[in-house]
Length: 310
Image 1 (cartoon, rainbow, N blue to C red):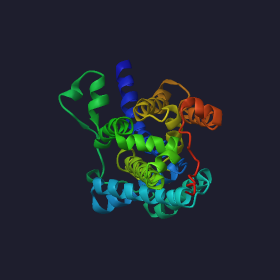
Image 2: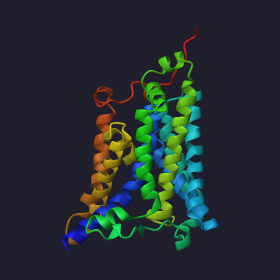
Image 3: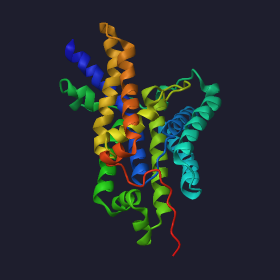
Image 4: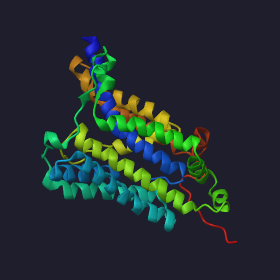
């Protein structure tokens, strides 16, 4: 009984963690390049709606994922133009993007409320036999959907690119000292645009996961604050993709515990509220300049780059 309960908590927890991980990975790249995007929640909402609508129309969840990522990229482009080209306030732009994405997805999605995806148009967990038969960990690790495994591969790949390649060095340098990158003849704007659009694509993919796998139906406020949790996860992971992998699973398991342990008399509201409480605490501490420096935040994060006249 106990082993079955633990198995269920971790199986659901890893599924709950997948959209958090995907969104956090994209935001890590954006912030590593110096762009703070608080619009993750709005991009996820539009990604979820676009993916759901496309999957419902075509019957193909992969097409839905592609459309969801395009939606996320389009939303992030708005933030990029304001923050990079017009050098606007990144905090204000990100908050506006969140409100815009949530509002637009709510208006457009009214006709879809209550609709569910047919089985053929959603991602289903499938067991990898005989690995799925391993006691306790078999179901947890080897009975998931394709996007779960893609998220793990992305975390490893993006960590490698960021820390072991020239591209990663350029991205990290842009977030630390954009003037030095510019002096080498590398376009700071192009690096930041690329990183911002990648963040949008992965936020859209995170939203796609919600509406095509985790809860294959459309309901308003489907993201339920997960974009903000992803932002806190970036700080919690110290802007490192592999740390984000483990941090996301921690948040996911805590969230899953709220739904599972309530059957045993534990407070559902307390357990369900823990991820959001952690989010508030992390974002509050991470908001101070001194704390961000101690935690290793990019030095030029949130600061528009003004090229000096030569």
